[in-house]
Image 1 (cartoon, rainbow, N blue to C red):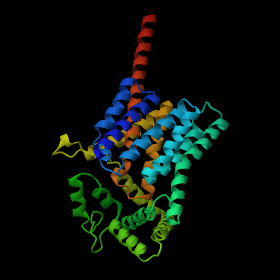
Image 2 (cartoon, one colour):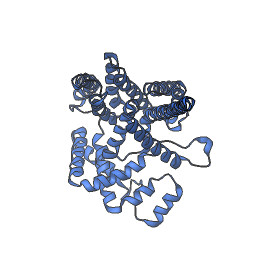
Image 3 (tube, rainbow, N blue to C red):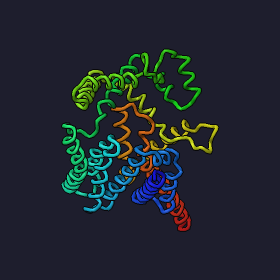
Image 4 (spheres, rainbow, N blue to C red):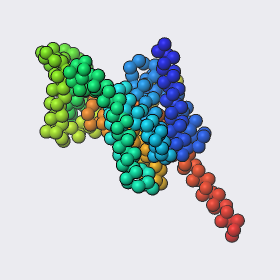
Length: 365
């Protein structure tokens, strides 16, 4: 049963990536390549086969990206409805998906520039109402069940873990964190030799441990000592937010460290064993995103920018509020692949047009 559901999710995500690439201007072959990238991705295959993982989130984020691209490039009420409802479902799969709502509203307010601001604002308002419907329904259900209007019951734990990480980075430095989270054994060993007292990888529940074990011990103790465990979770979340605001320098520094960690979402293919290609794939992923963004901004590639809005919003939210495990970036991979294939397709088309124009001018001469 799990394998069937996983295969369906992976297939739906691949189809969504192909459609997204097509909406961004990719050729048929490039759109097919976007689907192949999804099916070939070890991280996405693993996510689809693990219940409760990022597999469902990847499918929903891709569907939301397709709807948003359709709303911007084609317009129409159906596209707005698809984008809004799909975006609203994303936070139910993974809470960080809530970042897609303001990001998509911003996209609809800004694009396309050929449409009047009044019409863009109306589309953004309709989208926001539709996107908030699933969220409101779920949080109302939680209010009735728990007495708290919340999206999840561990939001405070996530924020407090990040707060503990901020303090650890302030004490031990950012370099040992970066080396500990670099997927190269040589880098990890170098970090351990240079900073033997750094505890980023010390996941021990007894003794001092590291930021995660300290945060979880305190979170569990707060829940046990409270008559309302969810209220204790919310209190820790508020305390964490207060720390972020009172120590902005530490928070930004830790954000840089976890942003580095989050790039390594793609897993090394099994065929590459005994070699581990995670580090190389992470650098390729980062380079591809930078190149696609630069090319789209320079050439005015609206469709590509729309596809990247969701993955960028998710990345920034995780870098700002979580410890950013690499798997948190997995839901954005299909849209990144679609944007990459659309950019490659357009670059090739421009080269063909330039060559054709050159031949035409030489014939006239």
